[in-house]
Length: 343
Image 1: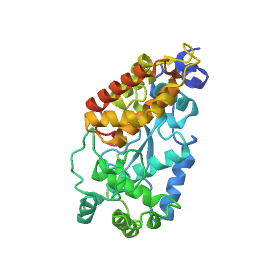
Image 2: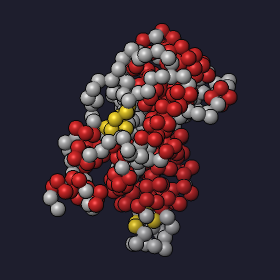
Image 3: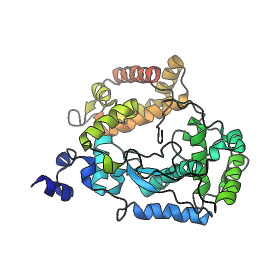
C-alpha cells in the first residue's frame, strides 16, 4: 500500500501503523463526524437560554479555549471511534469519551468562550463574585471538596482552581438542561453566582460578541505535523503523575500478575480492605487531607484491577510497601490534581 493509499484508508491499518501517521494526515473534521450532533445539542441549549452567540468549535490536541479567544478546542480523538480506541489504549482513559462527560466538558469550555466573547471578566461584579481574572494560574491548587461556595460539575472541585474556571463551571451548571440549579443549590452561598449568571445572560444573550475568534486557531489537529506516537509520548510526559499509568511499574513490583499467582486475592481487594488503615497512616505522616489520600487509594486500586494484579500470600509486606508508596506520592506530588484546559 502506497503512502497516499494509507492516508486515504488509514482506518484499515493496524493500531501500530496508525500511531506512526501524522495527525494532520488523518483528515479529521467535525462536519459529518459523531461530534456534529453533540455540538448542535450545545447550540440548542444556548438557544433555549436566549443566547444567540454560538462559539465555533475545532479539533485540537485537547479540551481547551485559548486565552481570551472565544473558540472551543475538542480533542481530535473524539471525532473518530478508532482513534478513541487508540486513546484508551495509550492513555487508559478517554476524556469526554461518552456523551454525558462530553457535554459536561463542552459546556465548561463554552463558559470560557462566553466569558471571552463578551469580556465579562472586566466587569466589577464578575470580579467581586469570582475573583480577579488576572490571578496567577498554578500547576497545583488546594481545594475544599465539600465547599458550598462553588458548583459541583467537573472532577476535583475544578471550580476552585481559578476565578476563570469558577465562572466556566458556574455557567456550565446553569446551562445544563433539567439541572434545577435554583433548587439544587438553594441555601448555598454559590447561589449568588448562579443568579448573577442567569441575570447577565438575559441581558447580553441577544447582543453580538465583542470579541470573535481568529481564523487559524492554535493547536489545531489539521496543522499537527507530529505522529500520534510522538503526540502520546509528549502527552504522558506533560501529565506526569496525573497519567493513569504513571505508577504501574511500582504497583507491579508490589504485587504479582494474575498469570503468576491466579489463586491469590486481588490487589485491589487488599487495598480497599485496608483503606482506612492506609489513609490514617499516610495522613499522620504527610499532613495531607484524608479525602485526598482516600481518592489516591481508590485510583491505585483501579489501576491494580486494570493490570490484573494480585496480592502475595504475605499481606503484611504488601501493606508496608503500599504505605511507603502512598507516603512518597503524597509527599512529593499530591497537593491537588489540576488539568490546564485553556492556557
